[in-house]
Each structure stands twice: as C-alpha cells, then as structure tokens.
Image 1 (cartoon, rainbow, N blue to C red):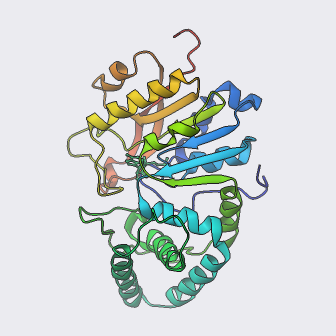
Image 2 (cartoon, protein in one colour; image 1 turned 180 degrees about the vertical axis):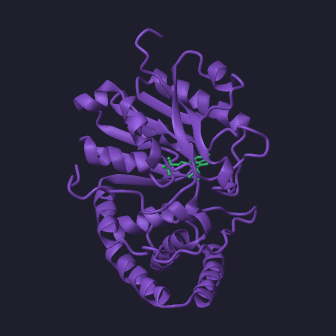
Length: 308
Ligand SMILES: C[S@@+](CC[C@H](N)C(=O)[O-])C[C@H]1O[C@@H](n2cnc3c(N)ncnc32)[C@H](O)[C@@H]1O
C-alpha cells in the first residue's frame, strides 16, 4: 500500500473519469476486498485510473493489472513506471516555458505542441514493449495538452489525431511532481498492457477483483462520446463485454461494471442474473454546460447473495 499521507490521483483528466463517483463505487466493492482476500486487482478499461489509484491506496493488493485500447495512455503509464524523473524534468521545462507567455503566445505553443504530438504519434507503436526515449517526450506532451486544452480532455478524430482546441487557464498545473512520483510507486507492482479488454482473461482467478468501466452506451442518439480511440464501442461490443463478464463470473472472480443508464432495459436484460444498482453521477463531458449535471449511472455486480 502506498503512503496514505500522499493521496495518489489520476495524472490525466479523462472522459468518464470516476473521481466523482468513488464514494458510491467503494460502497459496492465486494466484501472480499475489504477483508483482504483479494490478491489481484484488474482494470481492463483503465482510462485515467481513478478507481485503480483509489484501490491501490486503501486496500492491500499484491498485484495490479491495468489495460486500455488507447496506445497514448499505455505509453504514458509505462513511461511513468520506468522513467518518472526524466518525465518530470521534461514537463518542468515545458511548464517554465509556457507559464511566462501571454495568451496569444500560449495558444501558439499549444497548437505547435499538438501538431508535433500528432506527427510523432504516427511513428510510435505502443505494442513495441520496451520504453523508448521518445516516449518521455510524448508523455510530457500528452500531459501538457491534457492540462491546457479546452475542458481538459483526450479526444481523437477518425485518423487517430488529438483534436481538442486550446483552453484558457490562468495557472495550469502542468507538472505535479509529487503525484507523478506517487503514481510511479503504485506502477512498480502493476502489469500495464495495451489491448482489448478480453486480454486480461489469463490473469483472472477466484482471488481477483475486476472493475470494468467501458465507454458508455449513449443515452440519446446525439450524446455519444466514444472517441477515446479510433474504434467505437457499440451495442455489439457491450454484449461481447457481457459475455466476458459471464465467463469471468464462472471463474469465481469478483466483478463490478459501470455504465450509463439509457433507461431502455438494455442492461437489465443483458445482466438479468446480476445485481444492478443505480447511483448519481455528475457528468462533465457535455460541451453544453446546461446539459451537465447529475445523472443516473449503473453499477453491475456479481456478488448478489441470492442470484446463484
Ligand atoms: C469510460 S473510460 C474509462 C474511464 C476510467 N474509469 C477513468 O476513471 O478515467 C473507457 C476506456 O475504455 C477504453 N476502451 C475502449 N474500447 C476498449 C476495448 N475494446 N478494450 C479495452 N479498452 C477499451 C477507452 O480507451 C477508455 O480509456
């Protein structure tokens, strides 16, 4: 367990990030997590990892497995795991250069970094295992863009290019050294994987707790935010995930899954054998500020005592 005096938090702001929902999520954690009989925590749609960091801090877990389909994220996690001091050096330089600029110059700096980031992305493959020198620069650029772009999000277009515009922040904290070091410490006992959510199957056993936070099923036709990566997550994908959930249930693993509440019975039908709870979440990825606010979200679990 990491030092409780230094709360570890996500180093990126991510669409669907779970920081606002941690209290309700932890209230529904399996009893085995609280009694210490879970040895492995697995999060196959890790995003910025709000739940992962929370669990790493408050429960004693022997090892962690995190994965995501987004290569930029995986590059960032692996860089922080292996090269956190070099990353801090790189980010501090960016911060020094950026904060003393006026708004016009900051805007120029932002768009220049964004172009470089997109250009470099075409030459990098996250699957290539080893951490490479250029990953440090790339992770620094990713964190910088995330801290200074509009709404602080990561979104890519169909070509896989980061396309969020400049955001006006007076004093953005670009380099949070203490948190990056704390994140790096947690990552020392974490296996970081780039790929599909089903890739974790081999590491899941009855002493595992798996938390799934897939892209939401859109509540309305126009509310879709699925651009974490080039690939979309449609109903067919939601059902493929349900099948995988059932498979892991049969292995005896403890499972939790969150999703939106489209109120069309889709999840009630798909997960009819499981426990479904509704919790209130604040969503902040809607670009129309008036449409933000409290909204129902589903938590689905396989620990309902009477379902078997
Ligand atoms: C709702 S977000 C997770 C948010 C995360 N819980 C957090 O706190 O930031 C969903 C994540 O699933 C990833 N994803 C989408 N399709 C995937 C797939 N087939 N396999 C694994 N990850 C996928 C996306 O890249 C995105 O990071």
